[in-house]
Image 1 (cartoon, rainbow, N blue to C red):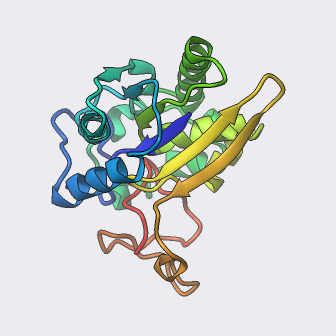
Image 2 (image 1 turned 135 degrees about the vertical axis):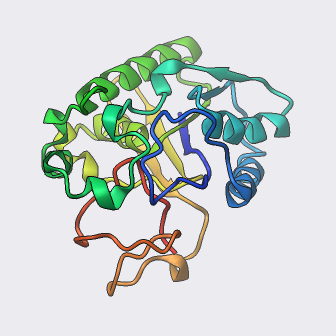
Length: 229
């Protein structure tokens, strides 16, 4: 399974977009989607599957267009329902008491009026099992999804408790590859954006692509963030 996160939007990073309707890729995101399609052009895919949200469908469509395929949507790969957190600035959310639960004990985090992170992992992993069974061990397929969903799937593949999933990163337009076998999954790629080491963040700071600085230096980006420069 090839997991791809959607490209950048005007909300990615400073705002928790969640399930806000009509959030499309911006110019940078469209360029990322095109680059992702080029990177995967030589990879045979049995299917191109996507979250139903616009930013994922548009990213997946770039990959599908490259091979004249169709995009199939699966609600189980959709973004976490952040409820009352949806559409609010990350800097504001970081002052909420729930923020520390999301950071340290995400398995206990349930967003007011929304979904629990444990439920997100359960539905996404169930979808993975179903798609794996559909195609068998010899086929590869792409799933375009969201930062927290991808992190939850990776945590499951690594046998990690959900409380450890904030140690995983999934940047916009990144590629993560998991090979599932009867005995165990193998993580082949993680957060691969195709760059070289000079693009990695320095030890001095954690500035994101939108210019916002991580407030504590150790907090995970809820929703996935805008990546690093």
